Length: 108
Image (tube, rainbow, N blue to C red; front, top):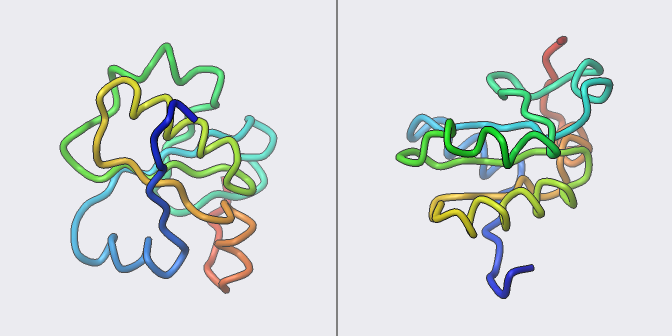
């Protein structure tokens, strides 16, 4: 993917990051998927909209991208990295990995 490695964080690592500093959570799933439950504090930004709104994403704090399994959010990470973002992470396993780790999902 664009010849760069994607930084990843798992559910427990994300919780540690949230305890230590403010992070930007971006959920790139579809409207239907997002409505089924999301990680508390995540902003919904469907993947196909990312090129249109990337300039609105804060670049000073860590940006964690989320999807269902981690594949689409990895694409989103690569896209943001190509736009100059340096503090971008993919949530390994996505929302499925989050739930499997016993973490709660918020109702939409």
